Length: 453
Ligand code: AMP
View (tube, rainbow, N blue to C red):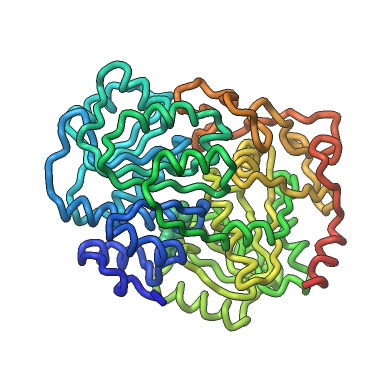
């Protein structure tokens, strides 16, 4: 069994980058996929975001690219990763830069909704690793700015979401342009028949790697949302933490400053709390984590970055004091509970300005959070309800529906932070229960869920 990266035959510059990221153990998909990918096999990965799948394909691709040094031909790329949204494209590109920081390879990212000239200029020089959404890439191809003759690696990421978002036709067209001699990978969280067919067309004798923990973890977590005004969040948190059933709670804030303020507020109210974030020394962070692990403090307040890699069993509750503006962060945050087969509860505090983020999260996880309407501090400003469903909403959209998309691989409604306030004012006159078929639950249910653990 592979339990450390040193067992994976990765070259030293990659190992060094992983050490900097403080990755010690490969995730299951990394352990299973990397050896096959290094050996040049095609791969079908059934896995969703949060499993570490990006590094699972990025690390072996980087290694194989440097093992065969060659200049990328002009207007072309040596490796192409297709992904459905600009957020994912940006994130994957950042991952390649992070893991490949000592390799000197050229990366670029292409998506719609922004000017194309910088993308055209970058392509002209030749790219080692290109991450793209399908619509803009096809646009540039049609204008003669892109060729695929230098390509030897192809990754289709989030294939089922491509299908949902109506991009599959674009994907097929792009695949038709690619050289036949290549290594191909396809990742999908689910395998509808259409994706099975695509696998048959795109991959040659693929290794199949399936990891489900992340999705089943997320499904096991009881996910709730409380609509509350920003100014009442601290009081709401303090009131909920009075419940002794909350034996180990991780509270996420977006900023370091926020983490300090929340921790100080709770401590003043007599609740033992520690905070960890990037401004604290390594020693202070280790101490805080140690006290939390040992049960000396019940509540740990953390920022996303500081909490990365925290793997502590027995976290009963995750509180999203702020709703993360990157939906994937939500999945990572709540995955800190329900470890090792346990149950877990995630409670998100949503103020009027955060409803767009909530919508993005529900779109990514394809799950609705349960609205807890009865709590001590119901929202007065910005409406107490969740945002109304809009044209983009829905589980499996019929194919060909571009979800309010401009048809160029760019989903405008997914910009970071741009959704602030989006959805505000929707939902007036409807109870959350009516709106979403969600349940209105009182706080009492939190207690009963607790007891069930
Ligand atoms: P992904 O599923 O690729 O979106 O990755 C999920 C998150 O896990 C990202 O924030 C990565 O930085 C992080 N990650 C990936 N692999 C590892 C690892 N082996 N150890 C710790 N964190 C990791």
